[in-house]
Image 1 (cartoon, rainbow, N blue to C red):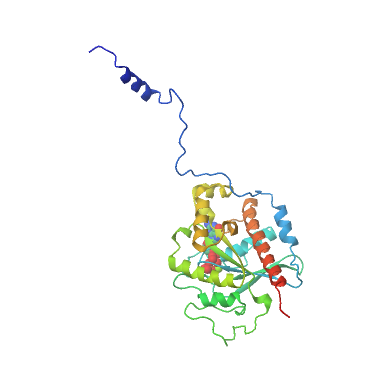
Image 2 (spheres, rainbow, N blue to C red):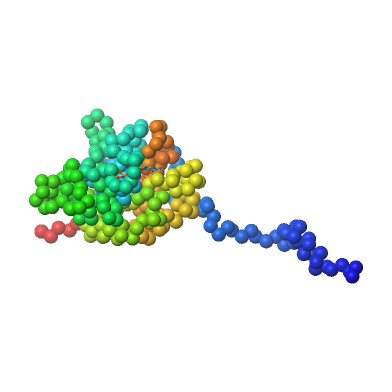
Length: 309
Ligand SMILES: Nc1nc2c(ncn2[C@@H]2O[C@H](COP(=O)(O)OP(=O)(O)OP(=O)(O)O)[C@@H](O)[C@H]2O)c(=O)[nH]1
Ligand SMILES: [Mg+2]
């Protein structure tokens, strides 16, 4: 009794001043919200990308890039078409009807091709084909997507979830012209539901992907609704390439559909805004530029193929 217990005193001091003595490196939290920026984007500086799109001309005369959008019901396909038009017109534009009611069934049912107006009587050399949404049980049939890719579906055809467009139907194009075939297939998925995409649905999409690949059609994916992914993104979409959750979502999507990461582009569509926003434009233009470049590569491929005489 009365003796000072040295180790007891040290322990006491340690609890009061835990950092005393040699400083320990602080361990990283296991799942940091932010990571190192991994894709370069010049926020708000859109002039170069805008010029690229405005000056784009296919090398081979008379060609128009046909961009077919495919994705789940309510993923934002029609909204993406509107967003592209808005960026190019520099004002909110909504030609393709988007639905704000529910995503239970596809709002877009017809096969509609949207030209993008440039100035005067001229149009951009690319068009967007909006089709009915894909679903694991209803929605557009896999066979109808394959027909659309090959240019067999005539403008205005109303897709039926119960039966595919039969050969001989008045909406069936017997001998499609090359310009009616899809040159780029764009998968449109909503970033906030990628996690819960059902296996049946993924299988269907993978089969379509294989079919498109067998025809060498260029393929790109866009992930919409990034603003719904997490509060940090809602606050500022410039966080897109530093948020861990966004990268993980893209990696998951890439793994499940076999689409390389450098073909996946996160976007936020214009859906509630009444004014243009340069950051939203940056992401839309980044996606659009890559869609055009991929499509153009496909044109080059078509023209450089060896044709036995
Ligand atoms: N928060 C948010 N909502 C979006 C975004 N894009 C689209 N939406 C909303 O999502 C809903 C569905 O959008 P649509 O463009 O109609 O989707 P769709 O893929 O064309 O749907 P279907 O034609 O039914 O297959 C609408 O209420 C849009 O306003 C986005 O980037 N962020
Ligand atoms: Mg639609």
